Length: 507
Image (tube, rainbow, N blue to C red; front, side, top):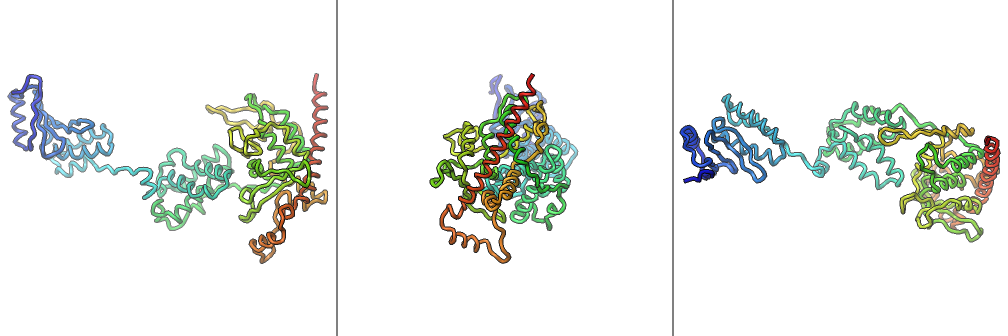
């Protein structure tokens, strides 16, 4: 006898006869206690609950219980089929609301007399399990974000640190928004053109060109080496190489700032350390880098990465230092790089000593964060501030430059940090020190017709046995002394004029 407020539970291999019996119990009001629950031994988790007024099918699982429908709507076979399908869908993570909708569709199909298997297939379509990120990247097909990540993982170890950052930035711009989850095999020229145009609108044509080149490289790598996994195995020809382009080409730079313009720029950077009302000032490391660029003419990438451990006193010339860079740190034409050494005269070192730089840093030009070197774009940002260029700020704001374009106000034609090298070389050539200029700038002799690079390098290694001699330090020192004197003389002349103009301007 069932208690008045208890369920009577039994395990039965349910049949149509049990359903008929349940219907009779409900109709006659003969359901004991709160009700009867029959667990079906023919289907895991399926049960028929018979209450005082109705009976219904349920699927019991560890995590939840799902109502499958009224007993009148589903027979035993239909209930078992629905239970099995719903159990699988719950394991696959199908949304419960979707399951309810599909059960309603199943009920209608059964009521309309559809064949059971067809009704189940229509109501409960198989859900293909989504692969994990690792599975998708291992077996394919790749999404665009997979292509970006995997191409970068291959490419980055072969790049210099500064180029790694830039290349990654260019390529990741393509994986924004819906593009990130698009299958590589489904990407069209229209999609890539939209990426190109978006980057051009948000940034510059130059940035768009960089992104396009990175995208082309990534697609070509996937097509050549990972066709099946990337989904490009049926692509007969890399159409993106020809069809995806940017109407932009870099213009060769030939501007050569005068000594006066270089000196005036140094003065402006020192006198206007806080620009735009942000309260932030140009750091000593940035000013030291600007001075070092003008005084040495070295490429900013190598210069900013100069290690203190690779600078040492020059025993033969008191007060001088020799700064050195490895072949890896130097830029080399035709894929070739060689070590470089530069003698730095005392007057140049005295200028750099004025700036407070972290003596504990391993780098000669340290960044604010411990253990890091100053990034080359710090000078780019300095020039943008001096030229009055507004900057994007948080929350769609803009950092304005109320001082305006200081270059224009002081008669300086805009110049780029690399332009210093042109001025230095031309000046020393005029002083009949052209050989010293080429040596300072690490220009390399062009190969003679038929000459192989390895033969010339071997000849140099045999002939130039000592570092000082091989690096032509004495020749470089003569040029560095002449150039440093010219820069500092121009600086003093400009400073005197600066102070005179400011004195006249005061009320």
